[in-house]
Length: 179
Image (cartoon, rainbow, N blue to C red; front, side, top):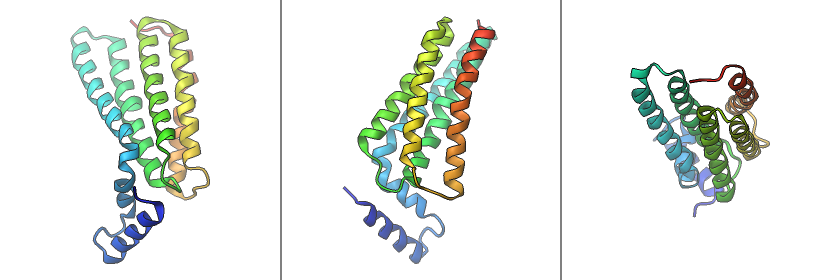
């Protein structure tokens, strides 16, 4: 197990040697990847799943299939990978395995509930999924508490956009049920 000071020393050594000029974040990501890999693996699975849903639903011109594919790719996939990578790079210390595992479980269970609730027209299930997602997002903000800079600001903006999209999606699901 590598401690944060060792990661920082390794990043400084690489930067000073110009092996990876300007990319010390890449070393940080590599050092903590075992802790955050589930964000990447589940995110990649959601992207592939979204592609499969798109392919399967395209002949039927299904509004629900189109929405589910986009949701899986953008929220379940791209956003999840971005959250994991950003936490790995921005966290002031080594991310706690328990905190990361709880976030991944909340995020993926939340996404599953949102998709299932929307597909079945069971709004309470979709809303429960939204609450799980909000829990995951709250933990993700805690993971980078005290970190400043442009990258941290972009990360927080992503979290805010995701958090605001949850109630918007819940209202839209009620106003415009999909078939």
